[in-house]
Length: 243
Image 1 (tube, one colour):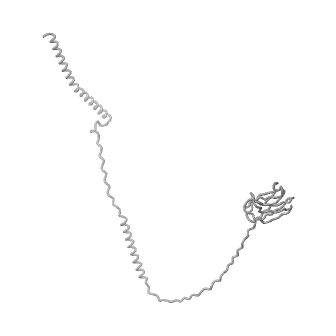
Image 2 (cartoon, one colour):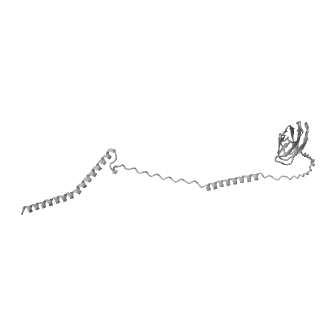
Image 3 (cartoon, rainbow, N blue to C red):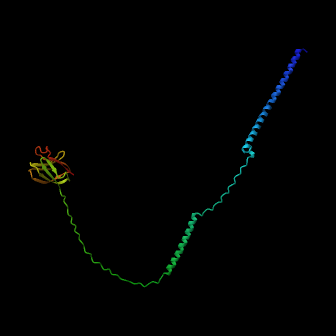
């Protein structure tokens, strides 16, 4: 056998050994990982149990104290129902009827006891006497009709003005007294404001004289003035209100 064949055989043998070792290592690798995880979990569990033991809490559910079960409540006893109102009313009605029966019996017995023998009949005749007639009184009523007194107004004429004793008079009959207290003759005229017929007038009146007369004034406003030339323009006029 040559050196080359021996070397090749040796290399093949070494390769076969390496392949087997690799396969065995690959088979052992999952078991190692599993053991590692198990060890880590056991370590975590031990650490958690230690912490719970140090804090005074039970380490597992089975060490916890069982809660006491609540006691069943006693059922309330059924209460007795009151008697219906109808029965009460019937009872009271029966008692009242019994009372009325007793009262009727007592009245009957008292009426029987109070029966007395009939008394003799007495006949009395009565005669009515007519009353004398009362005197007739006659009442006489006298009605006096009152007549309304006409109103009065005084107009004093001077140079050159009219002075009225009042500014307003009631509608109807009015007595106008015209007094010439000036030094010249003057007259008097009354016409509605806005135009119209003359309602009252006095002719030429001499100084120091007066005249009065009754006139009828309808309701309205009237202008009083002297109609002599220039007198009204110089202020010889006034206004009278009739209500």
